[in-house]
Amino acid sequence: MQKLELRQNLKEIIEKTKSKLITEFFNNNKQEPNTYRAALLKLIIDSKAGYDQAIIDEKQSRILNLFSANDLYKTDYYSSIIQFISTNNYDLPVSYLQNSKQINSFYTYHNTLITSYNLINDLLFQDDKLQESLELENYIEAENNGFLSFEITSENNIDFKSFSVVVSNIDELAKLVTEIISTIDKIKFNENPKLILADSGSNTVLSIKLPKEISKSISKIIDDAWLYFTNKSRYNLAKINSNLSESLEIIAKIKKAEVEKIVSPEQAELWRRGIINSTEAIIMNNTLTKSKSEEIVIISNQKLLQETSTKLLTEGKDEISS
Image (cartoon, rainbow, N blue to C red; front, side, top):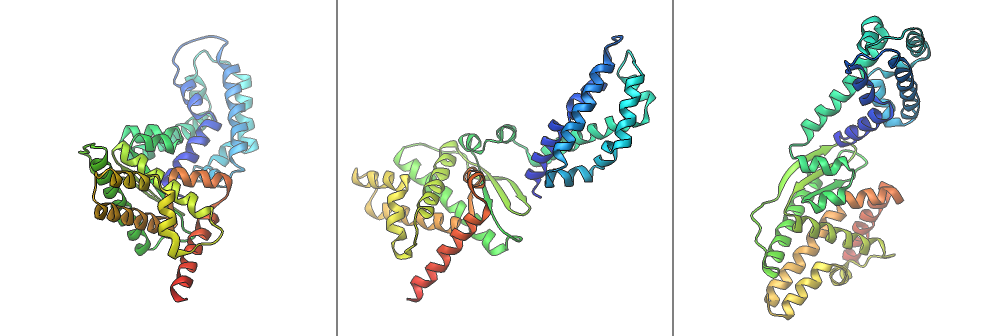
């Protein structure tokens, strides 16, 4: 399980089982007679309902087992908590912790969940804007803020050669796009690409900090190229360069600059070849932007990406050998 995946599932468990509300309840030092028993009973019941939802999710179940949550929610233990609350009405929430070992353990468990989640956040994210974007689970918004994430899919651990190819071509694509936009749009960029997150698991996620314009442009290139590949029933590798050129918005931008004599034909051709070659290399190594990958997961699964990449490689070999 990726650290990002662990973080997201832990967040969902905390929300489902009311961990924050439970810890906030017991951290309240305000004395109010005949108020807390009903509120605490509702929290415990809602927490159990959330646990019952989380435990049927395979990944969340693994996390719950890791934190020994099953011991706290099993029938006899849970019933003893309900019984104690039902027969005791304290003026201070902390009194429940002081007088019930089971409730104290229940509180400690939920507090540990929150502490663990915060620790993972601190380890993963050094940039608050990246964290805020991913808190919203919106990779498109992250891209618009200059945080571009790629996901490398693999049935097994990714091999070093493929990883190197992906990273080097992402770097090359970033350099090309920066040069193109700087030259054509006359925009100066003082920020160099910076890897800010590398998260491995069943898949590998790379997050890169870039100028916003560069991040959005690269995302658009990958999206356009993926749309081209998936809409073709048969791939003729000899025609990919010319056909893909017509599908990428940035290539049209280069062509327009060439016509307007902003760049020379030789420079325009170097850019075109570089963009297409790097984009092909990224996609053919089972890699997409995280926003596109998330979109594909919704409508399909990892096999779509892997089968398309394999199809490209296989038919490419057929073209070369024939």
